[in-house]
Length: 303
Image (cartoon, rainbow, N blue to C red; front, top):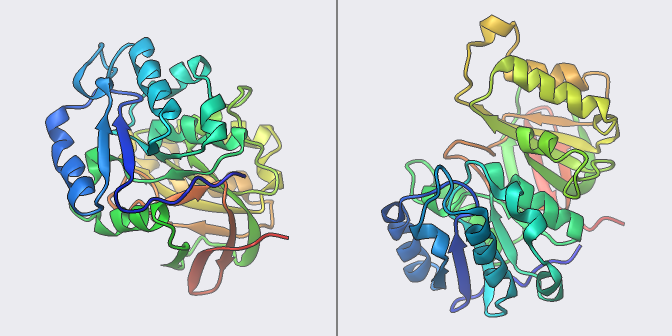
């Protein structure tokens, strides 16, 4: 995997909207924060001030925005302002040649999982982390700090309390994942990630419990869940029905799909559609250690 250069004060970064539209006034404080607190220069995409139905702009405009930032050698990182839906629509319109010659950080989560997975398939690390629309949300200070640490080169070392559903053990492998619905959506495409030997992290939002089960079964039927090194299960937020209707909670649905496998599992990890959404380096070699009272995720050199 290629690792883009870490940021330093004075670097230029880009902010655009790869998916749904966003009100520019909702971004002004985050942009000011990056300029004053992180001491970065911020270039704004055309897609931040336009709209096309639910999208930030037409596919053509969003693709052009993305292409221009990928091709601009002065831009060291690209943030999608928000998720929603639509980033996968433009991936096949993008020429990644310049990006592969001079890799830069791509940052986002939710729908932007499609972009992060595509970057992984191209052999470049990216970051699953909080987006500018949510930079200054209440309760999200640690998430924002974790993103800064990752962008500026501080090694990752996370510790979280144990969860009753955890399975103890130790795993090493590349960290991949993101939104469950997007991981399933990418199956069969050029952006599908080979999960064999990987530490997979999953989260989702707004789904029905039966739909979560359907997606986990789809992943299982690919055979890839059997070949994981380890599994990290984050937030499953604002679900569209009560678990009593389906008969299982989101975590029980996930566990049922992987129960026969022996790899370690960490439930309740702070990643997903909640203020606690710690930055995750997609593609990086990591070690997951699940103990009786503690779970650790740390960078490791994999032999």
